[in-house]
Figure (cartoon, rainbow, N blue to C red):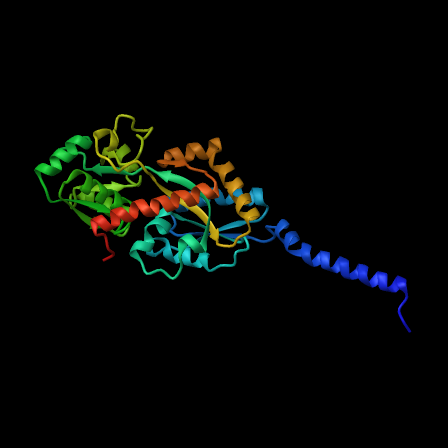
Length: 327
């Protein structure tokens, strides 16, 4: 017996509703994000500046997103270990990455990487920028950038410490060497704390730093000679920049960035960007960041991508000309 017209119409309607439901399922799932905890992979150890900023953000994001944001420290290889974990995670919005811009801009020149950070990670925002500085012992003969260059030219062969080969302070140090023509020797350490310890102990002459030295500068245990960034530090307005001393090539600051696995839905990337930017620009965060020698960047995903690409080109030139290689 043939089905009735009413039955055929009912079946067609059922199929139509099923099709609409199937089409709407991904959108509904995306609209429901987040429905479980989110992990924030941090590519440096606990206690460092990136970790502190990430742990400041995590509880605020937990409140605004309605799900716990859990910080997971995965340090090593200048960010590559944590970066690889994030790059190979599902692009569903439940894995975020906090790392340094160097992982994207510098590491491809120096490491054999199992992922391409420019292609396998999606920029969300540049979190904060760090002002680089040059510090010395209190009795060091120079007191500013010009006298520092003069002293180094008169006494070639002095040493400067950094947290390691290929680190942002190392690139700043090599840029300084090439721009001024001084003869200084790089001494890599496993972290700035070790370098600063040897500086205060008299084993090295200078340290190129990203702010870790500030407590010792405030306590008078170290002397801030110059700022190797675009602008002076608000806390030390009398300390000039290298650019002001006529030393070129120091018009950019290093930054920390937040990223996600490539393919993460744009709606999720934009939502995270909006929430992070709101926190970074708040009065509470502004005050806390200033105390750590940090300033919010809080830009768009597109701006972040463009800046990382520009850093990759600029720093690649420094690496090639200075002959920097991992040892």
